Length: 141
Image 1 (cartoon, helix red, strand yellow):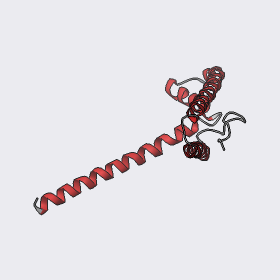
Image 2 (image 1 turned 180 degrees about the vertical axis):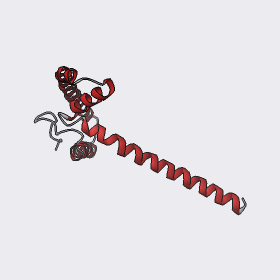
Image 3 (image 1 turned 60 degrees about the vertical axis):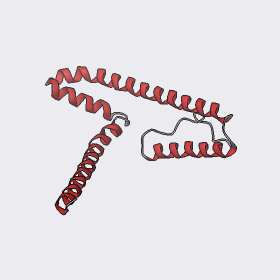
């Protein structure tokens, strides 16, 4: 391989790496606020109402009449999201309990640590509030 070809190859790999990094940065900065927003009560309905107002050119009277419908929908979606989260936690808890009989004591401890890391990671990132009391059993001893 001559020197010119080698530098072109290095430059091509470097450019591909930079393009991937820029794409990841763009995705992270433009999608995270949307995910966070829909987890904060009230913000989702405000955003939906604003979107409808702009896209449909609603009159003030229409906005006034549509607002309770959007708020009701947002509340229902929040309830569905909570119920889904509860179902996911129950499914995970049941699967982990079923696994307990198949694991060594060391593996049981590691599974408990994995669960704790997962809960901590989600709570610190605001992805979901901590589960209600009793929703997740304490890690096994």
